[in-house]
Length: 159
Image (cartoon, rainbow, N blue to C red; front, side):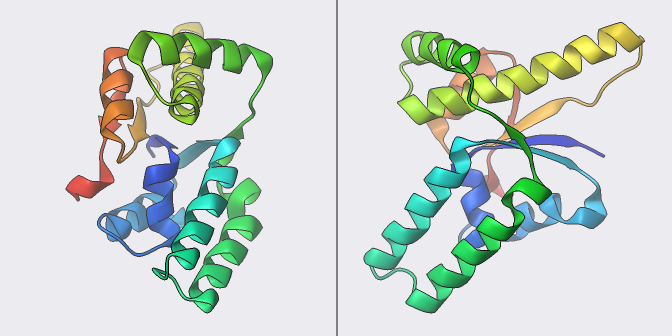
């Protein structure tokens, strides 16, 4: 079992065919028994990405409808969702300024670092090794900031 935090750029590959889709499907396959985290805002970003692709003609009405239906029916059951709290927003604000990130990227990074910190604390408390959280993102600026914050990163575009 591995622990992954998916940002929107990576999770979109599960709902729309593009570079990295097969790799993301392997990671998210329930048989792999991986722990999958996302920020609550990922739902909004994915709906936006899918509907914009439909508007631009990259997806048919049927393809977009199927992607949205699957996303909405599976979001809360397939992923551990990190809620956006005032504390998380404060962390995101600091990360946006420190790394010059776009707003939602800063929220994604704050959520990932929150999950990472929880795993580190649980490992210390139990004296047991915990799995390393890996941020899965195709956003180069976010990946650079995440690495600077000490997170492991994997880019689905490299698979």
